[in-house]
Length: 267
Length: 175
Image (cartoon, rainbow over all chains, first blue to last red; front, side):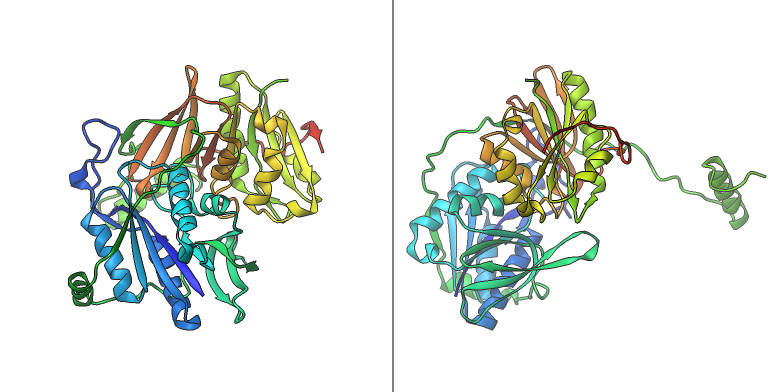
């Protein structure tokens, strides 16, 4: 079984993101890229299949920023157990999801090893999906079935299908049998993403070279584009009102709030 | 034929999701600004009674087929893209939830139309649509302008107060 895990980098929202003076981009100095949370689970799910079904795991990232964080994520994936890592270089910085799907599809179709993959996994979403999620668009371009959001999976021993758990509202889960090859949107892996020592990653960085390929040319009908006209921090419309004072004072203020909202009878 | 503002109804096992009513409320505002009719599009199997609960819409387009019983976005998109009313719509509002994952983006892709996801607000500005989207875990708002029609907007839960739930008397335009 061959599993391709498509990973994406996103700004770390623990950092205080700033908007650049142009008003239509993030200030580069405020952005530290990290692996998207769902893609961290995508990688873990791929590695679980490697352990349980001897799957070959290839991870792939589309990089247009030449960021050291991207390189580190690929080396980390190798250190965790991935068999191969591919960095697809694209010069255009702001890629739409549709264009990203077309590039990944072309890369997969052109490489006989990738084309024969049984499973293509990617995170169900990123925090930057302005045009929508990647997986359904990628599946459409590859002519493969797609299912998501998937929280657990187990392939049958013949390798012809995979049983995947799809999430529904109110904690309900549906079990689906998906014929392979297929594209799955990963919400969560069967286990939490594993840890790998930094020293192991550093060792690999000194001993192994990443496969880097240029993004293939895409010949597709242009779609009317969306124009980004402003990026801003959300306006705070309401603040929490802090009730301060002694217990008696706070209790009185709380009673007044409840009475004012009709939630408690007046005095 | 009037070019509608469309709202794709999200229902699962005969229950309409709360976001549908939020979309209808937002769709009503957009339709009023465009002086266009608001149409709800209901897909499913044996769920006709639901149409009567979509009261904010001027009409409901109902597609019934056993293949539509399960809300699989790929199947729904193929059904939607085959409808002239969808291809010629002014704009289409789709829910962004786990049930309707990727439906908006797929529909836009199928129609060759622009797609905006993670919308929390939508309004008409001159000849354009102006959508406000929440990015980066809600830390940044992006305001985007879309000129083309139809345009597909994926709306996340919570754009505004829902309306129309439970009212009846909506004309069922097609089955």
